[in-house]
Amino acid sequence: MKIESLDLLLQEELRDIYDAENQLVKALPKMAKAAFSEELRDAINEHLQATKGHVERLEECFRALDVAPKGKTCAGMKGLIEEGEEVAGQDAGDELSDLAIIGVAQRVEHYEIAAYGTARTFAERLGNDEVAELLQETLTEEEEADERLTEIAETLLDEIAQVEGAEDEEEGAALEEDDEAPVGAVKPKVKKSTGL
Image 1 (cartoon, one colour):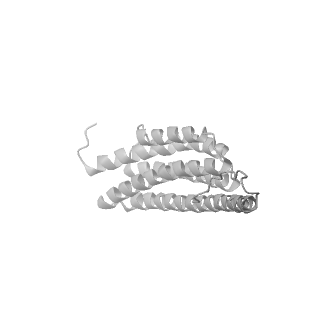
Image 2 (cartoon, helix red, strand yellow):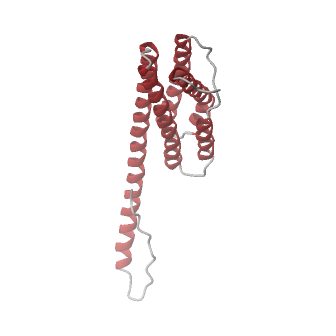
Image 3 (cartoon, rainbow, N blue to C red):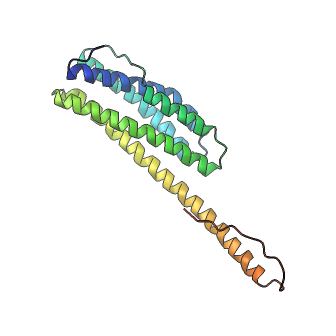
């Protein structure tokens, strides 16, 4: 399809986003299932519901433009989802696995933020306030989801730091005991944690 106007470019952007959101509706349940943290699982499940709403809102945009709601394969989202499946299959501790899932989820959010921001700007330029407002509503929700993921990641990072801090204290106590060992006794080498 040759794109000869901003109207057609907006329609193509919406088709791409529409496919991306529909891919996410299928992928988010798997991501939630892979999460260890209840808070992360809840956030993903809540975003799944929001994503279904985003699909409906995009369908409103198509109706406002008087075009059929139809997607075109979004290769970017397909790649991000494949990356998410890879991350979910990694052998890592609970917190580290969740942090990896959050990393992928935030890349998804940033991709969507860019897509919705672009489409909204095109709609504004075309003077289509209805479509621009619908897209802005979703854009705001995507930004809020990204912020929530950041908050969950910070909590997980704090938990990891506390565990590592406790391990460092135990190692320090073991080293002090070793300092009292008889002359000539071999002291074990303890790897120091660098922290976060």
